[in-house]
Length: 279
Length: 260
Image (cartoon, one colour):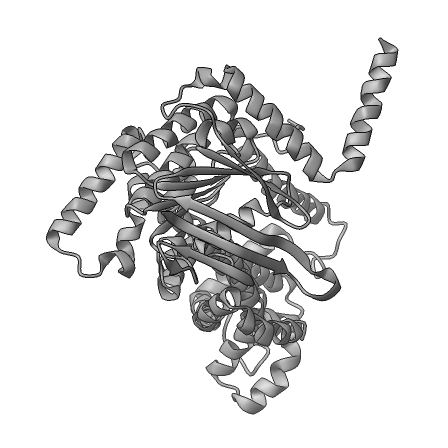
């Protein structure tokens, strides 16, 4: 059943007195076509864990397998979408989306039918992401939201079973972000991809995920895994539903408790008291 | 007008640029016309122009320009041919960086002029000696700049290719090189300027022609107007080449210069 299988995985950055325990005994199973989101205070290792799954970082202990095969580096079965600066500015939107076709890994024993299918696939992705009118523009001529749509389309081009997303909408404004949320949910449904999505935005984590994994720092570990009590088909109004808000409250409280930022909390308490006295 | 980094109009830009060039010229004209300074110390623009004309008619100005340009371009091109691949490896692999960068840093602080006796000893005193001096003056700086250009390629561009299954070779050919190209062309432009500054030094070595040699010879005869003419000539050629590089940059990388 488990498609991505993480077992007692651990990772340490550096060594000796300066060693930082980035990930401590991570146990998690992610099913095929599941949409899992990761949240947590900064330094909790959520991005590191995603990069480990993507094969961009190594791990020191435990095991990590995708479809039964141990992960030992990046692979075409796991596409990754980054927060920014990952597009190739010298290529047009369409050329960016088709980039994987330049790589031997995707051209191996390619027939003319495959080449044609790839062309159709690129067209379909341009349409799906609403990029038809900018297909021959260069990335730096596009807004941030459009650039991220190109990045998603490029990641989807080779039909990877797994899509890893590292705060892909973190640099976008709130309105654009909402549009992207529905866009990525549609992609998930249409492409039947397994999506692992890292964010610092709790609303985003709940709205997108079937499960929300809350991580905690020092050492980076999984704190709680929440099942999202929302139907499979979602709309923006659900962000105001009582069950959504209840879960949001629970997660936010837990993030504050685990963040270990005592000084911040004390400062906040003091400010609140002062403003109450002034009133 | 004085808002930080605020844009100014195209017109204002050109007006200021021309003003910036004209102002010292006017000061020069005024100072030499006033007669306050002896002509031996500060020849007037008219003297320099007249000298330039006799140089052209009687002294083979074009030949001097041609041979100097050839020396500079040859020395610069030779260093580019080696610095580009070497810098690419220094910027891509930490092991190569650790091996070569401190050494390059060490050598680049050595003055090129000091190498003249060694160059004469090792390379001789013919054309290759002049090219070698220009090479020594530009190469070590160029390697470090190329390495830095390569290191500036965003990691996300490289990692995106890795997650798409690109091999190391493919990442270098399809991501790092095209991504660094605009910066590399800028590095070539800047180092071309430096190559010109080594011209006079290079033509210290048993030269009998060239703009730098003409300046050195004029020094012996206290022909200040010719020294002026030579220096201005080098500046003008440099400016022209710089503009050529900028034009090539706009042509080669339209995606950088497009609207935002």
